[in-house]
Length: 182
Image 1 (cartoon, rainbow, N blue to C red):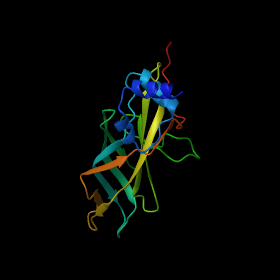
Image 2 (spheres, rainbow, N blue to C red):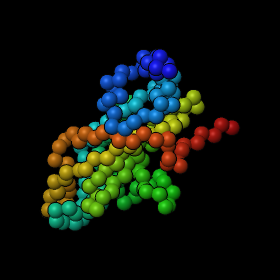
Image 3 (tube, rainbow, N blue to C red):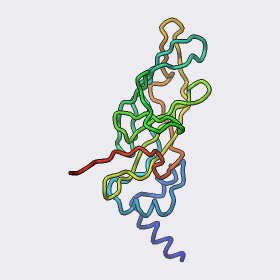
Image 4 (tube, helix red, strand yellow):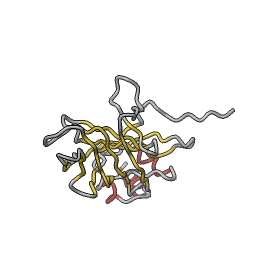
C-alpha cells in the first residue's frame, strides 16, 4: 500500500510544493484525473487590477452601482475584463446567489457582504474530453475602497489585489454553454 501511494505521488506532473501552495484540498480522484488531462491546472490564486466603481451614495461605505476590473489567473493563463452595471443579468436561475459572467463565461463573480465589499471569483477549470470544464475554483477578497465624496467613484487602495482560491468543486452553476450540431 505504501508503495502505491509513493508511486502515485511520484507520477504527478506537478510538484508537491505546488500542492502545498493551494488553499484548498484537491480530492485524490481530481489529482488522478488532472494527471491524465492536458490543460488541467489546479490554480492557487488570482489577481484583480484596475478595480473602479461608481456609487450614487455618500459616506464611508456607499452602495456600488457599477464596477469593472481586470481578472487574471497566472496558473491557467486566463486574463479577462469583468464588469457590472444596471443592465447586467445574473447567469444563475432565481433562488441561487447571482453570478455575473466576465468576458469569458468560464469566469464569474459575486459581490456580497453587508457593504458589498467582498468579491468572490469563480473560474471553471479542467476541460474534459468534450471540452466542457467540469470543475470550478472559488476564492474571495475583501476590497479596501477609497471613495470620492464628490465624484461618486471608488477605487481599490492597491492597483493589484491578490486572492487565493479556497474551494475546488464540481461545477455547480447550472448554466452551461450548449453547442448544438445539426
